Image 1 (cartoon, rainbow, N blue to C red):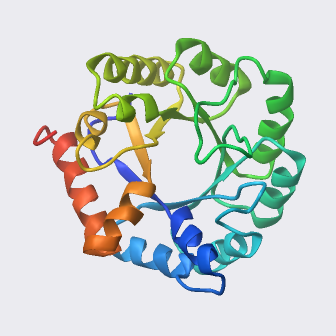
Image 2 (cartoon, rainbow, N blue to C red):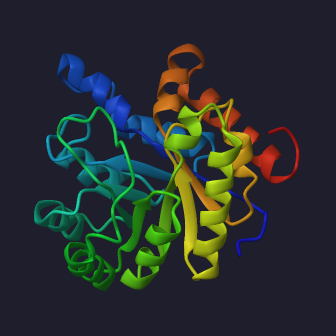
Length: 247
């Protein structure tokens, strides 16, 4: 079990690219956002290269690997195209996520239990390339156990249902139980989706968690306070919750 010490913050910069792409051109630059995140206390950068390239582009991923010192967590669909891109760029980590063209954002966890035959070759090839593989899954015992059987070192628990339920006690209990089970299988446990200032505390306080990945809220809050200030506030809230303070 992860000791209740430093909880890493991965900042997802996808929606800086969303704003850029709405107008075309190269402003705002997501790589500049990654540099600001590093200065503000982020422990890593997360970027989702979607099949339709609605926000991040192939060139963005190549630049992040080449120009940013923080570890890059590449979120990717379980496809041969995305596998080839990951193997070419060699990010620190690759998080395999479900993806549908019609969705606005990732709507659920990956079905690790039902798609083992599809996932196993990707997991193996990424691992052989020295890329740390994680699976974005629902906080369910069936999915945690499937991830363990696939041999991934990391799972990321989908916190969307918790966030969308206004911090439901039942949803928080599901996250806690899944984190405990995953840690018991020797997996490193991450979490993310829909987290903001108001609801991050109870999740950050789960001692088995090693990392939270947060993006949309931080980019939205940056409109009002600036990106560095938003990240510093999130960092402070996570630290306080982990230390037993405000939640």
